[in-house]
Image (cartoon, rainbow, N blue to C red; front, side, top):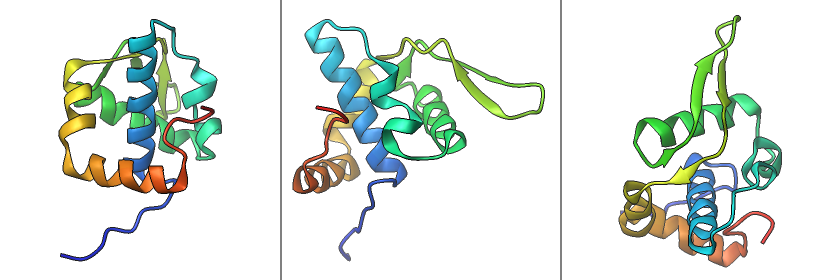
Length: 115
């Protein structure tokens, strides 16, 4: 099996950062700051970020989101007061790709945005 090459804007990297941040907030009893996990924080298009948040929501890794389509049919994420679920914590800690992503981010020293 070959080496997995990751970029800082790969979906699994963004997912890891979001889940790690939400888990850190939960453990420390603080409300997540959307500016710390927004598309701007990651330097990615809002439509890409919306798709990532939809994936996290649909897989049951995050709750507290309102996902809808605007009048033009574009995906929007609202009501952003998300929390990580038990399933999200398990995915973060047990998924082999997430562990590879964690090692990649440790090497680049960028696990949690802004921390």
